[in-house]
Image (cartoon, rainbow, N blue to C red; front, side, top):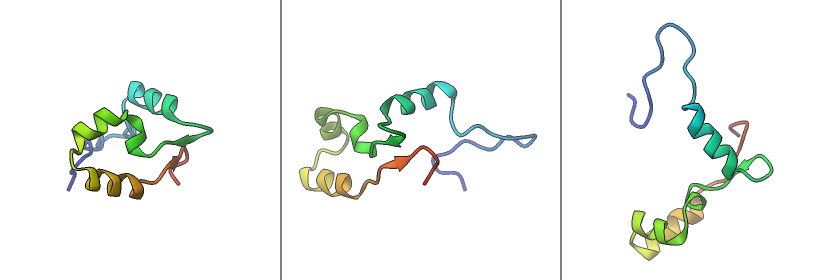
Length: 71
């Protein structure tokens, strides 16, 4: 089941994401570490995505930063 993913190419390798998207993620990274998802947007945008203050704070606390090697 693919929920938030593309279908793999049946004849070879499938890129993780389109090159432009990966370039944007690289720009968000600091010393090779990608900010937690909530750090990709400013406070107003996060409030629009998750209007409930308590839920937004809980989600933000639980979001890990990610190294570029997938760890």
